[in-house]
Length: 417
Image (cartoon, rainbow, N blue to C red; front, side, top):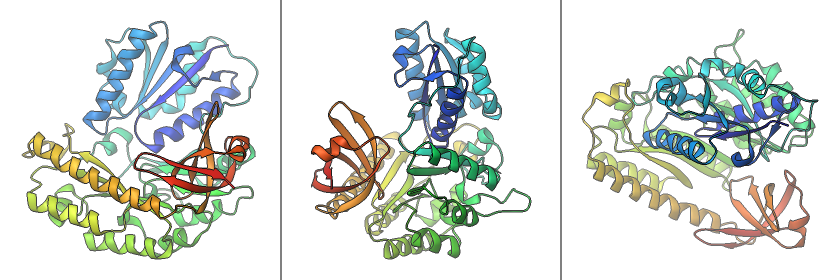
Protein backbone atom coordinates (compact mmCIF):
# COMPACT_ATOMS: atom_id res chain seq x y z
CA UNK A 1 0.00 0.00 0.00
CA UNK A 2 1.32 3.45 -0.94
CA UNK A 3 2.01 5.53 2.13
CA UNK A 4 1.77 9.32 2.32
CA UNK A 5 3.30 11.73 4.81
CA UNK A 6 2.10 15.35 5.13
CA UNK A 7 4.46 17.89 6.67
CA UNK A 8 3.05 21.30 7.52
CA UNK A 9 4.77 24.61 8.03
CA UNK A 10 3.04 27.76 9.24
CA UNK A 11 -0.54 28.47 10.14
CA UNK A 12 -3.56 26.59 11.42
CA UNK A 13 -5.12 26.87 7.96
CA UNK A 14 -2.32 24.71 6.56
CA UNK A 15 -2.99 22.23 9.35
CA UNK A 16 -6.72 22.21 8.55
CA UNK A 17 -5.98 21.59 4.87
CA UNK A 18 -3.74 18.66 5.76
CA UNK A 19 -6.42 17.25 8.06
CA UNK A 20 -8.90 17.33 5.16
CA UNK A 21 -6.42 15.72 2.77
CA UNK A 22 -5.76 12.87 5.21
CA UNK A 23 -9.49 12.09 5.34
CA UNK A 24 -9.85 12.13 1.55
CA UNK A 25 -6.73 10.02 1.02
CA UNK A 26 -8.12 7.37 3.38
CA UNK A 27 -11.32 7.34 1.32
CA UNK A 28 -9.15 6.59 -1.73
CA UNK A 29 -7.37 3.75 0.06
CA UNK A 30 -4.07 5.54 0.69
CA UNK A 31 -2.53 5.39 4.17
CA UNK A 32 -1.32 8.60 5.80
CA UNK A 33 1.87 7.90 7.74
CA UNK A 34 3.18 9.53 10.91
CA UNK A 35 6.84 9.31 9.85
CA UNK A 36 8.25 10.52 6.53
CA UNK A 37 11.00 7.91 6.69
CA UNK A 38 8.54 5.14 5.84
CA UNK A 39 6.53 7.05 3.26
CA UNK A 40 6.50 6.78 -0.52
CA UNK A 41 4.94 10.20 -1.12
CA UNK A 42 5.69 13.29 0.96
CA UNK A 43 3.54 16.43 0.83
CA UNK A 44 5.28 19.60 2.01
CA UNK A 45 2.70 22.29 2.79
CA UNK A 46 4.91 25.37 2.93
CA UNK A 47 4.80 28.79 4.56
CA UNK A 48 6.22 32.01 3.11
CA UNK A 49 5.22 34.41 5.85
CA UNK A 50 8.74 34.98 7.21
CA UNK A 51 12.33 34.39 6.17
CA UNK A 52 12.67 31.89 9.03
CA UNK A 53 9.72 29.88 7.70
CA UNK A 54 11.26 29.76 4.22
CA UNK A 55 14.58 28.57 5.66
CA UNK A 56 12.83 25.80 7.62
CA UNK A 57 11.09 24.55 4.46
CA UNK A 58 14.33 24.41 2.50
CA UNK A 59 16.12 22.67 5.38
CA UNK A 60 13.46 19.92 5.45
CA UNK A 61 13.60 19.46 1.67
CA UNK A 62 17.37 19.08 1.79
CA UNK A 63 16.99 16.50 4.55
CA UNK A 64 14.46 14.58 2.46
CA UNK A 65 16.74 14.68 -0.57
CA UNK A 66 19.66 13.44 1.52
CA UNK A 67 17.97 10.78 3.67
CA UNK A 68 14.99 9.69 1.57
CA UNK A 69 15.98 10.28 -2.08
CA UNK A 70 13.53 7.66 -3.39
CA UNK A 71 10.49 9.49 -1.98
CA UNK A 72 8.41 11.51 -4.40
CA UNK A 73 7.78 14.98 -3.02
CA UNK A 74 4.82 17.27 -3.71
CA UNK A 75 5.33 20.89 -2.69
CA UNK A 76 2.41 23.23 -2.11
CA UNK A 77 1.49 26.24 0.05
CA UNK A 78 2.52 29.87 0.19
CA UNK A 79 6.22 29.46 -0.55
CA UNK A 80 5.39 27.35 -3.58
CA UNK A 81 3.04 30.14 -4.66
CA UNK A 82 5.66 32.81 -4.05
CA UNK A 83 8.61 31.16 -5.78
CA UNK A 84 7.98 28.01 -7.84
CA UNK A 85 11.48 28.12 -9.28
CA UNK A 86 12.99 27.73 -5.82
CA UNK A 87 12.09 24.02 -5.89
CA UNK A 88 13.20 23.15 -9.42
CA UNK A 89 16.67 21.96 -8.34
CA UNK A 90 15.39 19.37 -5.85
CA UNK A 91 15.58 16.10 -7.77
CA UNK A 92 12.87 14.33 -5.80
CA UNK A 93 10.21 17.07 -6.18
CA UNK A 94 7.64 15.46 -8.46
CA UNK A 95 5.02 18.22 -8.48
CA UNK A 96 4.45 21.79 -7.36
CA UNK A 97 0.84 22.65 -6.55
CA UNK A 98 0.03 26.37 -6.12
CA UNK A 99 -2.47 27.53 -3.51
CA UNK A 100 -5.11 28.17 -6.16
CA UNK A 101 -4.95 24.50 -7.19
CA UNK A 102 -4.86 22.88 -3.75
CA UNK A 103 -8.20 21.21 -4.42
CA UNK A 104 -6.36 19.08 -7.03
CA UNK A 105 -3.68 17.90 -4.60
CA UNK A 106 -5.42 14.70 -3.54
CA UNK A 107 -5.98 13.76 -7.21
CA UNK A 108 -2.29 14.46 -7.84
CA UNK A 109 -1.31 12.12 -5.01
CA UNK A 110 -3.62 9.38 -6.25
CA UNK A 111 -2.12 9.74 -9.72
CA UNK A 112 1.43 9.51 -8.39
CA UNK A 113 0.51 6.50 -6.27
CA UNK A 114 -0.67 4.72 -9.41
CA UNK A 115 -3.02 2.53 -7.41
CA UNK A 116 -5.66 2.87 -4.77
CA UNK A 117 -7.40 0.37 -2.57
CA UNK A 118 -10.66 0.14 -0.76
CA UNK A 119 -11.65 2.90 1.65
CA UNK A 120 -9.67 2.57 4.87
CA UNK A 121 -10.09 3.96 8.35
CA UNK A 122 -8.51 7.44 8.36
CA UNK A 123 -5.37 7.74 10.44
CA UNK A 124 -5.58 9.90 13.56
CA UNK A 125 -3.69 12.60 11.72
CA UNK A 126 -4.51 14.98 14.56
CA UNK A 127 -6.10 14.41 17.94
CA UNK A 128 -8.26 17.46 17.45
CA UNK A 129 -10.22 18.03 14.24
CA UNK A 130 -9.35 21.12 12.21
CA UNK A 131 -11.87 22.62 9.82
CA UNK A 132 -10.99 25.42 7.41
CA UNK A 133 -13.95 27.78 7.08
CA UNK A 134 -12.25 30.73 5.37
CA UNK A 135 -9.26 31.45 3.15
CA UNK A 136 -7.60 34.55 1.72
CA UNK A 137 -7.49 38.12 2.97
CA UNK A 138 -8.60 41.54 1.70
CA UNK A 139 -6.56 43.52 4.24
CA UNK A 140 -3.42 45.04 2.83
CA UNK A 141 -1.06 45.30 5.77
CA UNK A 142 2.15 46.83 4.50
CA UNK A 143 4.35 43.95 5.68
CA UNK A 144 2.28 40.96 4.58
CA UNK A 145 2.29 38.85 1.41
CA UNK A 146 -0.70 36.72 2.34
CA UNK A 147 -3.28 38.61 0.17
CA UNK A 148 -0.99 38.03 -2.82
CA UNK A 149 -0.29 34.39 -2.01
CA UNK A 150 -3.72 33.30 -0.78
CA UNK A 151 -5.90 35.63 -2.82
CA UNK A 152 -9.04 37.52 -1.74
CA UNK A 153 -11.18 36.48 1.22
CA UNK A 154 -13.32 33.43 0.47
CA UNK A 155 -15.69 31.72 2.91
CA UNK A 156 -17.02 28.18 2.94
CA UNK A 157 -20.85 28.22 2.92
CA UNK A 158 -22.21 27.49 6.40
CA UNK A 159 -24.04 24.32 5.34
CA UNK A 160 -20.76 22.87 4.05
CA UNK A 161 -18.99 23.78 7.29
CA UNK A 162 -21.70 22.05 9.33
CA UNK A 163 -21.40 18.92 7.20
CA UNK A 164 -17.65 18.82 7.89
CA UNK A 165 -18.24 19.38 11.61
CA UNK A 166 -20.79 16.57 11.75
CA UNK A 167 -18.43 14.23 9.91
CA UNK A 168 -15.55 14.69 12.35
CA UNK A 169 -17.87 14.39 15.35
CA UNK A 170 -19.06 11.06 13.93
CA UNK A 171 -15.40 10.03 13.72
CA UNK A 172 -15.10 10.55 17.48
CA UNK A 173 -13.41 13.94 17.69
CA UNK A 174 -14.41 15.85 20.83
CA UNK A 175 -12.68 19.11 19.96
CA UNK A 176 -12.95 21.04 16.69
CA UNK A 177 -10.66 23.93 15.75
CA UNK A 178 -12.17 26.34 13.21
CA UNK A 179 -9.47 28.00 11.13
CA UNK A 180 -9.27 30.84 8.65
CA UNK A 181 -6.65 33.18 7.25
CA UNK A 182 -8.88 36.10 8.28
CA UNK A 183 -11.41 34.26 10.41
CA UNK A 184 -13.29 37.31 11.65
CA UNK A 185 -14.06 38.26 8.03
CA UNK A 186 -16.00 35.01 7.60
CA UNK A 187 -19.14 35.31 5.50
CA UNK A 188 -18.70 38.83 4.16
CA UNK A 189 -18.13 37.49 0.64
CA UNK A 190 -21.10 35.09 0.64
CA UNK A 191 -24.49 35.76 -0.94
CA UNK A 192 -26.41 36.50 1.17
CA UNK A 193 -23.71 37.65 3.59
CA UNK A 194 -23.09 35.60 6.73
CA UNK A 195 -21.15 36.34 9.91
CA UNK A 196 -18.74 34.41 12.08
CA UNK A 197 -21.22 34.85 14.94
CA UNK A 198 -24.04 33.11 13.07
CA UNK A 199 -21.70 30.28 12.05
CA UNK A 200 -20.46 29.71 15.61
CA UNK A 201 -24.00 29.79 16.96
CA UNK A 202 -24.87 26.91 14.64
CA UNK A 203 -21.71 24.93 15.33
CA UNK A 204 -22.12 24.89 19.12
CA UNK A 205 -25.57 23.31 18.67
CA UNK A 206 -24.09 20.17 17.12
CA UNK A 207 -24.71 17.15 19.37
CA UNK A 208 -21.52 15.38 20.37
CA UNK A 209 -19.32 18.46 20.16
CA UNK A 210 -17.54 19.09 23.46
CA UNK A 211 -15.08 21.87 22.70
CA UNK A 212 -14.77 24.45 19.94
CA UNK A 213 -11.48 26.30 19.61
CA UNK A 214 -10.99 29.42 17.50
CA UNK A 215 -7.88 30.20 15.50
CA UNK A 216 -6.49 33.73 15.30
CA UNK A 217 -8.97 36.59 15.72
CA UNK A 218 -8.56 40.10 14.32
CA UNK A 219 -9.41 42.70 16.98
CA UNK A 220 -10.42 45.12 14.21
CA UNK A 221 -13.32 42.82 13.27
CA UNK A 222 -14.62 41.78 16.68
CA UNK A 223 -18.07 43.36 17.04
CA UNK A 224 -19.64 43.51 20.46
CA UNK A 225 -22.17 40.72 19.84
CA UNK A 226 -19.45 38.31 18.65
CA UNK A 227 -17.22 39.23 21.58
CA UNK A 228 -20.05 38.63 24.05
CA UNK A 229 -20.87 35.28 22.47
CA UNK A 230 -17.36 33.82 22.49
CA UNK A 231 -16.82 35.02 26.04
CA UNK A 232 -20.09 33.51 27.28
CA UNK A 233 -20.39 30.20 25.41
CA UNK A 234 -19.17 27.27 27.51
CA UNK A 235 -18.32 25.06 24.50
CA UNK A 236 -15.87 27.66 23.18
CA UNK A 237 -12.45 27.05 24.65
CA UNK A 238 -11.05 29.53 27.14
CA UNK A 239 -8.30 30.38 24.69
CA UNK A 240 -8.33 33.45 22.48
CA UNK A 241 -5.47 34.35 20.16
CA UNK A 242 -5.53 37.86 18.70
CA UNK A 243 -3.40 39.17 15.83
CA UNK A 244 -2.16 42.34 17.52
CA UNK A 245 1.20 42.72 15.68
CA UNK A 246 2.17 45.86 17.62
CA UNK A 247 0.86 48.40 20.14
CA UNK A 248 2.64 51.64 19.22
CA UNK A 249 0.19 53.92 17.35
CA UNK A 250 2.95 55.07 15.01
CA UNK A 251 4.01 51.54 14.06
CA UNK A 252 0.40 50.39 13.68
CA UNK A 253 -0.20 53.23 11.24
CA UNK A 254 2.90 52.26 9.20
CA UNK A 255 1.70 48.66 9.23
CA UNK A 256 -1.60 49.75 7.68
CA UNK A 257 -3.57 48.47 10.64
CA UNK A 258 -6.33 50.95 11.40
CA UNK A 259 -6.66 50.45 15.13
CA UNK A 260 -5.58 51.91 18.44
CA UNK A 261 -3.92 50.20 21.41
CA UNK A 262 -6.78 51.36 23.62
CA UNK A 263 -9.18 49.27 21.53
CA UNK A 264 -6.95 46.21 21.84
CA UNK A 265 -6.73 46.64 25.59
CA UNK A 266 -10.48 47.06 25.92
CA UNK A 267 -11.05 43.72 24.16
CA UNK A 268 -8.38 41.95 26.20
CA UNK A 269 -9.74 43.31 29.47
CA UNK A 270 -13.28 42.25 28.54
CA UNK A 271 -12.19 38.69 27.72
CA UNK A 272 -10.14 38.54 30.92
CA UNK A 273 -13.02 39.84 33.04
CA UNK A 274 -15.54 37.42 31.52
CA UNK A 275 -13.21 34.41 31.37
CA UNK A 276 -10.45 34.96 33.96
CA UNK A 277 -9.24 31.40 33.35
CA UNK A 278 -8.68 32.10 29.65
CA UNK A 279 -5.34 31.97 27.89
CA UNK A 280 -4.94 35.17 25.88
CA UNK A 281 -2.33 35.15 23.13
CA UNK A 282 -1.07 37.45 20.41
CA UNK A 283 1.21 37.65 17.40
CA UNK A 284 3.79 40.39 17.79
CA UNK A 285 6.27 41.84 15.28
CA UNK A 286 9.25 43.80 16.52
CA UNK A 287 11.98 45.49 14.51
CA UNK A 288 9.49 46.84 11.97
CA UNK A 289 11.03 49.46 9.63
CA UNK A 290 11.72 52.69 11.51
CA UNK A 291 10.55 51.20 14.83
CA UNK A 292 12.15 53.59 17.32
CA UNK A 293 13.33 52.80 20.82
CA UNK A 294 10.28 54.72 22.04
CA UNK A 295 7.99 52.52 19.90
CA UNK A 296 9.62 49.39 21.29
CA UNK A 297 9.36 50.53 24.91
CA UNK A 298 5.69 51.39 24.36
CA UNK A 299 5.09 47.88 23.01
CA UNK A 300 7.07 46.31 25.85
CA UNK A 301 5.07 48.14 28.51
CA UNK A 302 1.80 47.27 26.79
CA UNK A 303 2.66 43.58 26.79
CA UNK A 304 3.87 43.61 30.39
CA UNK A 305 0.74 45.29 31.76
CA UNK A 306 -1.93 43.72 29.52
CA UNK A 307 -3.85 40.54 30.43
CA UNK A 308 -2.03 38.63 27.67
CA UNK A 309 -0.71 35.29 28.92
CA UNK A 310 1.66 34.56 26.02
CA UNK A 311 2.75 36.03 22.69
CA UNK A 312 4.45 34.73 19.59
CA UNK A 313 7.23 37.18 18.80
CA UNK A 314 8.59 37.59 15.28
CA UNK A 315 11.56 39.69 14.24
CA UNK A 316 10.45 41.60 11.16
CA UNK A 317 11.78 40.11 7.92
CA UNK A 318 11.22 42.03 4.66
CA UNK A 319 8.87 40.37 2.20
CA UNK A 320 9.82 41.49 -1.33
CA UNK A 321 6.86 43.06 -3.07
CA UNK A 322 5.37 44.62 0.05
CA UNK A 323 5.57 48.37 0.75
CA UNK A 324 7.44 47.87 4.05
CA UNK A 325 10.27 46.02 2.28
CA UNK A 326 11.31 49.31 0.66
CA UNK A 327 11.57 51.24 3.94
CA UNK A 328 14.69 51.80 6.06
CA UNK A 329 15.22 48.79 8.28
CA UNK A 330 16.19 48.33 11.93
CA UNK A 331 19.69 46.80 12.43
CA UNK A 332 19.60 43.03 12.91
CA UNK A 333 21.31 43.17 16.31
CA UNK A 334 18.67 45.58 17.63
CA UNK A 335 15.87 43.44 16.20
CA UNK A 336 17.28 40.33 17.88
CA UNK A 337 17.71 42.05 21.24
CA UNK A 338 14.18 43.43 21.14
CA UNK A 339 12.68 40.08 20.18
CA UNK A 340 14.64 38.29 22.90
CA UNK A 341 13.40 40.80 25.47
CA UNK A 342 9.76 40.30 24.51
CA UNK A 343 10.09 36.52 24.45
CA UNK A 344 11.46 36.63 27.99
CA UNK A 345 8.38 38.57 29.11
CA UNK A 346 6.15 36.03 27.37
CA UNK A 347 7.82 33.11 29.15
CA UNK A 348 7.46 34.83 32.53
CA UNK A 349 3.80 35.69 31.97
CA UNK A 350 2.97 32.23 30.70
CA UNK A 351 4.60 30.58 33.72
CA UNK A 352 2.65 32.86 36.08
CA UNK A 353 -0.54 31.97 34.20
CA UNK A 354 0.03 28.22 34.49
CA UNK A 355 0.83 28.46 38.18
CA UNK A 356 -2.67 29.81 38.79
CA UNK A 357 -4.07 26.38 37.97
CA UNK A 358 -1.87 24.31 40.25
CA UNK A 359 -4.04 21.69 42.01
CA UNK A 360 -7.01 22.63 39.84
CA UNK A 361 -8.84 20.44 37.31
CA UNK A 362 -9.51 21.50 33.70
CA UNK A 363 -11.21 19.91 30.71
CA UNK A 364 -8.59 18.48 28.38
CA UNK A 365 -8.19 16.43 25.22
CA UNK A 366 -5.66 13.61 25.16
CA UNK A 367 -3.54 14.68 22.20
CA UNK A 368 -0.61 12.26 22.26
CA UNK A 369 0.18 8.75 23.49
CA UNK A 370 3.51 7.04 22.95
CA UNK A 371 4.54 4.10 25.08
CA UNK A 372 3.81 4.98 28.69
CA UNK A 373 3.80 8.72 27.99
CA UNK A 374 0.60 10.65 27.40
CA UNK A 375 -0.09 14.34 26.88
CA UNK A 376 -3.27 16.38 27.06
CA UNK A 377 -4.19 19.92 26.07
CA UNK A 378 -6.54 21.80 28.39
CA UNK A 379 -9.38 23.97 27.18
CA UNK A 380 -7.30 26.99 28.21
CA UNK A 381 -4.26 25.92 26.22
CA UNK A 382 -1.98 24.30 28.78
CA UNK A 383 -0.08 21.22 27.61
CA UNK A 384 -0.01 18.66 30.43
CA UNK A 385 2.10 15.52 30.67
CA UNK A 386 -0.15 12.88 32.21
CA UNK A 387 0.86 10.54 35.02
CA UNK A 388 -1.01 7.88 37.00
CA UNK A 389 -3.03 4.79 36.09
CA UNK A 390 -6.15 6.65 34.97
CA UNK A 391 -4.04 8.74 32.65
CA UNK A 392 -2.62 5.65 30.97
CA UNK A 393 -6.13 4.29 30.46
CA UNK A 394 -7.40 7.48 28.79
CA UNK A 395 -7.76 7.09 25.04
CA UNK A 396 -6.41 9.38 22.32
CA UNK A 397 -8.87 12.20 21.48
CA UNK A 398 -10.79 11.52 24.68
CA UNK A 399 -12.12 14.43 26.74
CA UNK A 400 -10.95 14.01 30.33
CA UNK A 401 -10.75 16.09 33.54
CA UNK A 402 -7.08 16.75 34.28
CA UNK A 403 -5.75 18.05 37.59
CA UNK A 404 -2.47 19.92 37.33
CA UNK A 405 -0.09 18.90 40.11
CA UNK A 406 3.27 20.35 39.06
CA UNK A 407 4.33 23.43 37.08
CA UNK A 408 7.85 24.39 36.10
CA UNK A 409 9.29 26.75 33.50
CA UNK A 410 9.59 23.90 31.02
CA UNK A 411 6.90 21.38 31.91
CA UNK A 412 3.43 20.90 33.39
CA UNK A 413 2.36 17.53 34.76
CA UNK A 414 -1.00 16.29 35.97
CA UNK A 415 -3.33 13.34 36.16
CA UNK A 416 -6.77 12.30 35.01
CA UNK A 417 -9.25 12.55 37.91
